Image (tube, rainbow, N blue to C red; front, top):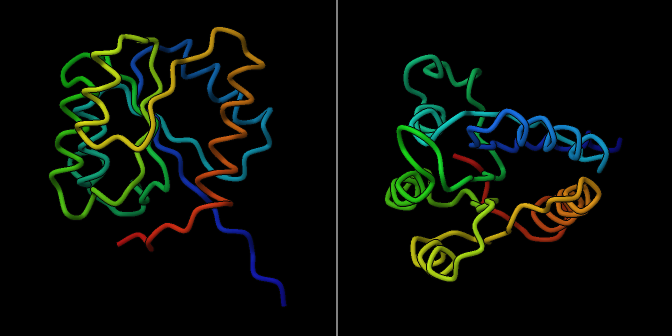
Length: 150
């Protein structure tokens, strides 16, 4: 018997409606196997990951295999959220890819210092975003070995 393919959860924190829609379309176009879940800011991201508020039931907040994190969001920005994720022993093992419009060297350096696994500037062309989603899927879900979610 062949085991069923593993369902991967990609949790994306981004406050921009258009970026979320484009990413959903790019994930579909890329043929990514898994579920894309959205939160709108760093505060909601931490609520999801820590299973607080509307995410208190584990079934409403399955552990993601990958976090896509925008830097500039209201309430709690990506930098603050990343700092909290990396400080938490239960969450620090989840790969975090910063996907943002910033290309500033200071942002790139600071994000790696905070423990991001990758920094990707959001592509402006849809086909380039599809390509990024394919590469992320290939690398994080088919190439590397990750620890089992707790």
